[in-house]
Image 1 (cartoon, rainbow, N blue to C red):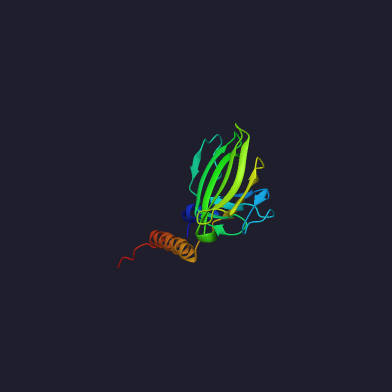
Image 2 (image 1 turned 60 degrees about the horizontal axis):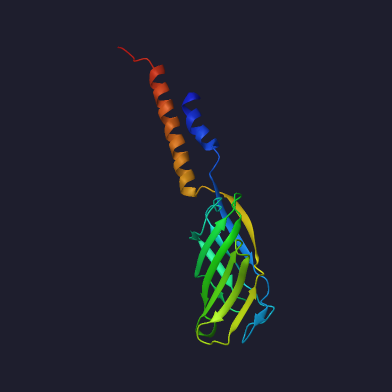
Length: 188
């Protein structure tokens, strides 16, 4: 069997597998300055959202469509989230509006806003059903942290089987061709 016939298929196995990377943005708010009903001044907004790739630089009021999210107002949590962000030249979040609903008291509107142009920042939670349930901090926005999880895509067993079957078939054809060329026909 010729070595040359297996060089290309074998070299394909040596190629690096694609890298998969999810980026997780985590927000940690400051404790509420004012709190009533079931909220306390030790509660705060926190949570994270995950996107398939890092946010691009210089975004302005970009509507994020996360592949996963989970936020809490300190009492209840919610995965239903409306996210708008602006990023700087490095892709870091510098302005944001987060709005999510929780089941607290039949539904609460939770919001985290920061606009550096007006130096306005606020984390607030207010009840839709009960007016006295309110919590907020004013001009003390939280902070964002970004982390990337790199994972090498592992081939599934069926794919490996198909590659191996292809290599065996290529080897068999190569052997059959070289075998036919080496045998001279017998004449009577």
